[in-house]
Amino acid sequence: ATKRVHIKFHMSTYHLADEDVIYPYVVHYQYKVKGETYNGKSQWFWFNPCIPKGAPIKILVDPKNPARSTVLKPES
Image 1 (cartoon, helix red, strand yellow):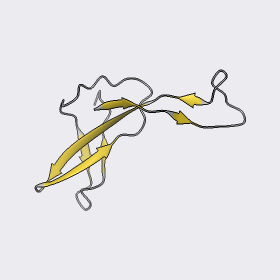
Image 2 (cartoon, helix red, strand yellow; image 1 turned 180 degrees about the vertical axis):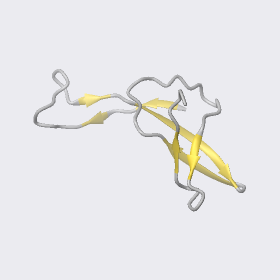
Image 3 (spheres, helix red, strand yellow; image 1 turned 120 degrees about the vertical axis):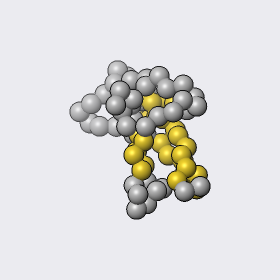
């Protein structure tokens, strides 16, 4: 599932209009390794990756620690 997240931050030299709020996208995913189910989430996407819920995506999984994973860019 792709969700927009609400992030508040403050940097003294950078402001977004009158608010320090941004809304990047995060992809939440689930995968299995050797029968074990894991959940993961992507880094922030500044554009909507337009991945429908349930659509297969490519991820990289650490073979030494299958709980560690990352999403490949949707265009990859």
